[in-house]
Image 1: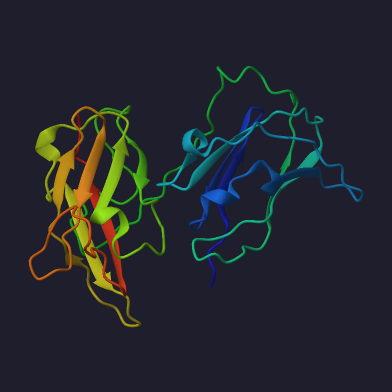
Image 2: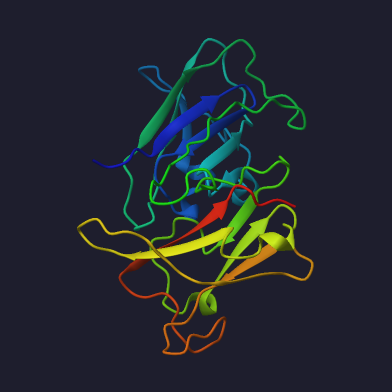
Length: 256
């Protein structure tokens, strides 16, 4: 059974929050793929319903959560449908259209966007019984400082296919601020891989080199090359073996 495109959605007068149920292509997150219209027998389509989407600021690739900011007036007491069309998943397959149906409450004019209340979105925690449940989370970093979080990763989280020599085996994790150097080791950045097979198989650990930029909040996870004598972050070698899937699990104890 295929995963739904929309796992969860919240609509208020200033914004729409959508959590996707599957990994989608960033190129799908364009305004033309979000159509807002009434649900009447003869629907009326809103022109330019949302502000231009900024995928860097508005989309969290880790939790697959998108924020859309209203830029059009809606009629109070009217039922609307937000149609999600033209979406592509990580395997370049088209996704069937899905809709969010809601009834506009009393005030339908977006207020100043520097003062809004963000709808509460419950984060989804996926537990892996093969690792320490009390120390790791694959959703986001849960640190004591609420302003400390992952902003982005390269390659993109959830990418299905990458080249064997992608970026010389380097994965970059962009944080909101620089983590403390005592967390830069394989105890806090747990790297694993497993062969893609039809029957269950356990993840195996991969020993990587963890480093940080001299002043930017960027942590580098360098995979070993597939050579007889492994090299790290060196051109001319393969780092990701065909037929394997890889993952990096960050400890919730990482902090600044």
